[in-house]
Length: 318
Ligand SMILES: [Zn+2]
Image (cartoon, rainbow, N blue to C red; front, side, top):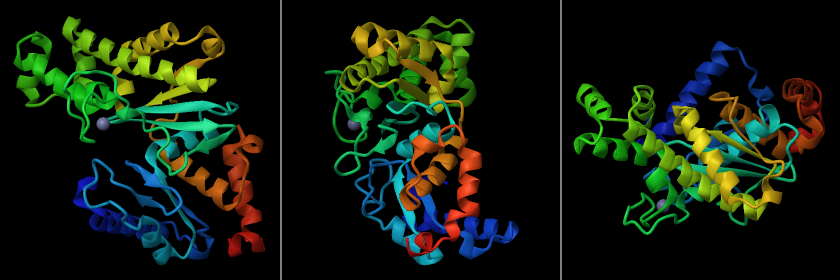
């Protein structure tokens, strides 16, 4: 579904799917202890409401938490999607065993989930990690947030498809031009197709985007000194060149002490990171499970918790 259809249509559809799941799997409603939801925009975690999300018209201050709490009579936690992905990676992916890490998603937009001391760091109001709107250039590239020169306006997935399309239309790249003729439009993944064909323009576009993201991450590394940066999202899957360009810029621009033990890797969980992260969010918030004691044992630990502790009085009152 398109989130631009608005909250009522989208959330009703999710509810319909949940009902189907509950019926098909014969799930006891009383066994649903909590729900975790990730939203592609800034979320005020306290209230569970999106706040002025740039790509989600009609969602501002929509009471997402209340919508599901009323329907399922269980606690509901709503967070920004990148935070949920970071939690998934922390519990069951590369982030296991790393207490200070960053999860950077490069999709249509760019965002960052921050794990600090083993827990997600949301900042004072929930907007920590919104790195896509850090200013990286004086060019007049207008961002969807209304500002100019934002990182995601020059290196996010939407920006890359725009840049690729411009290169094709201006006849700078034969490979991209042929692809545009075939498909009518170009996406970031078409750039990897052109790179495989040895197209120098596509190579340069990906290199520059990777370098721009890498320079921003270098600033974050100097500031925050993470042990691990996990990269995920559609654009990261365009291939090794993108990851290599990011790594190169981070290592070149960061202080030696900050990169001494720094690991930069592509996510291994892929599409599952969000679902695992949403479940982990419920475990952390509702049952106060400490990820430091659960690392590496997500499956066993989680099911252990559901089998025993959820039947305690504490979880019912929570
Ligand atoms: Zn912006």
